[in-house]
Image (tube, rainbow, N blue to C red; front, top):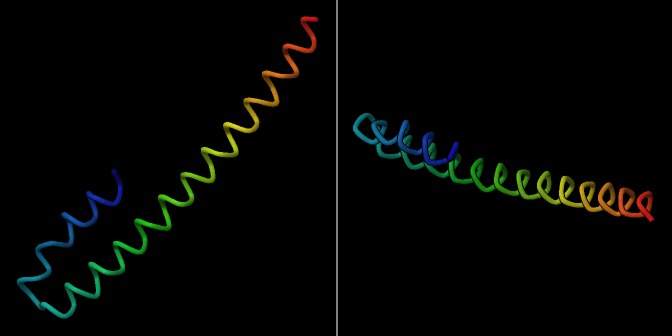
Length: 62
């Protein structure tokens, strides 16, 4: 997952500056949550549109 990769990538920053690391980590987590919410919304939209298409298809068959 995109989020996990980013968190791993920023882990080494702790060696340079714990405060910067914590701020970065928090930002990464927030980005993660945003991305997951966006993905869920996209998924929902796709599911809805597929359902509508499927219903239309079934109607045509009748």
